[in-house]
Every structure is written in C-alpha cells, then in structure tokens.
Amino acid sequence: MAEIHDSGLLLRRIPYSETSLICHFLTTEHGRISLMAKGARRAKSPFRAALYPLHRLFLTWRAGRTGMGTLIDIQREKALVDENKSLVGLELLSMASGLFQEGDPHGYEELMQALCLLSQRQELEGVCSSAWTLLHEAGWIGDLSHCWHCGEEIAMDTAMYWMGAQLVCDACGRGHAVSAGLRRSMLGVLEHGYIRLSDVDARQWKQMIGLVLQEHGVKVPDSFRSL
Image (tube, rainbow, N blue to C red; front, top):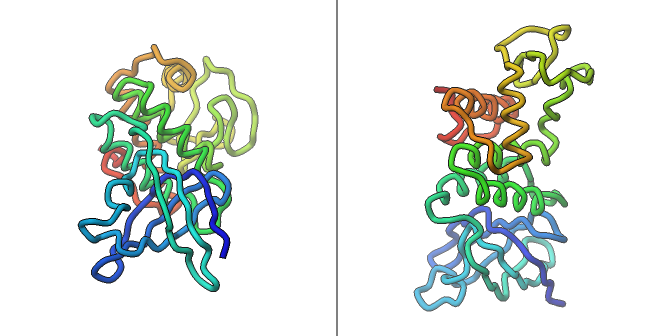
C-alpha cells in the first residue's frame, strides 16, 4: 500500500498494548487522523525522540485497509513555543482535540495560528489571544464588532453584553457587561503585539473563553476556569 506524507501536529498519545501508541494528529492535507505507532513505547524506538507535542512534525504513514493507518516515519522541527509557555500550549492542544474531530478536514492551520500568537505575545496576552483565535477560526465565536445573535454592527465605543456564551447587543439581551474598553483591548491584543491587558480584563476574557468551551461540552482547561 502506498505511503502518505504530510505535515502535522500531535494532539495526544494513548498507550496501546505494552509497546505501542495510538496517536492523534492534525495534518495539513488530511485533517485529523489517528495512527498506530507500533513499538513506540520501546526504549530504542526511533519514534520516542520525535513524538512530542508543540513541534511541527513531518509524517509518513500507510492507510489501514479497514481501520486506522500505521505510522512509518516521523521527523520533528524545533519547538513552536518557548518552554515557559508550554503548559498553555498543551491546553491549546486539549482545546483543539475537542474542537476538531476524527475525519474533520480542518484544524492544522487554525491550531498553528493560535500557537503562533501564543509565541509572539506576552504571557497574559498570549494566553487569551491564542485561545480566542482558535475558537474564532473553528467557527465557534464571532468577531468583536457585531452582535453574535442578530448580526448588527456595534460601534466600538458602545458596551455589549455576554449572555449564554454569546456577545450580544443591548437589543438582544442583557448579561454581564463587556465594556467598550475591554472590547478595544481585546481587538488590540489580537491585532498588535504591543497592547497590554490589565489583570481585570485578562480575567474577564479568560472567563468568556471558558464559558464558550463549557457551552459546547468541551473540557475547560485550568487557565480558563471561572475565578
């Protein structure tokens, strides 16, 4: 059977038997896939040095006749995020695992974009902007200038409201107020690297992210749990 080549990101590894792993990847051309890495748990396996999260990987595998394919070769590049941001990076992988399911053709570019923001921004700004970008690119949230319920454009100097994990205008309902200042700060962080968040704004942004994940039944990472 012909070999298949693609770039990918490792989402998770699941032990299988005493020596092997089932690995979930997001790939450029094939979306989310699962591959059997035979013997990957053995001390001398060539897979052990390459099967790491938060690295861009180059994969070679053979498709299964009826089930999952078999990993043949894997090469990795340098880490996509610094070590001091790796915990948040792993939380992004966990989020992506819930956002993109087996056979979904999307996910690789969306996750790469989020990891890029995490790497480029300061700590608080990177946490919030990377997770928000991942949700936006997955189609789970709208932009910051329109009501997510009625679609009406809302001026950036006007407060909006967070209701049922949606950002809505005054006409569509009331919930927790999202000030015009917070919206401008969120937009600034997403578009520019030099904007800094206050602790209060960062806390509210994280809570909004956590509520979106909770609304869709995705496990909420510790960084985004309500405080």
